[in-house]
Length: 216
Image (cartoon, rainbow, N blue to C red; front, side):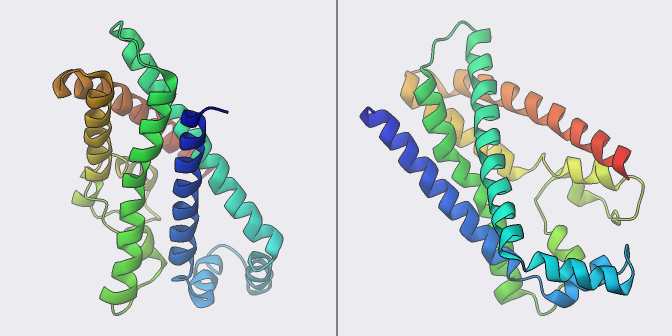
């Protein structure tokens, strides 16, 4: 195993540890009463209590962390693949390890909103509920609208939250990293990154909205 591989693995392990820690901190904000209030809207009292008990099982907790880990791996591979396709489309060669390492490092940008949410609801907000936790501002187009979770357009509203300042910041930092690594202009790098990333993001958002609407 060469130095580059060890470095990539190190960055990934650090990223994963930070992501799981922030997830744990945000989960600690949710009380049993909040869980119960959400479940009682869909199930009766006994079923709601059983589901609360099930959530405390170590196996369920480990499963949640396992799903988060797999989701992170899938996301990194998906973004890296989109970047590779973007560079290939303009006949620009970029080593896979540089793409993957850059994507892993810049992925830390995506942890910022969740950490800010934890800080706000821990030290800033006097009271909060599940709805306010889910609708914490993402500085996106969706924040211009007031949509309730029971509304028919809620799946589309949730999908629009993907297009926000965090994603723009992610693409900007990633563009800068690629411009340094490949010695190309920031404009050329940004053009490739923004088109490839937001095209993939649009497809994923529409797919998620369609799947969610179909289930509901």
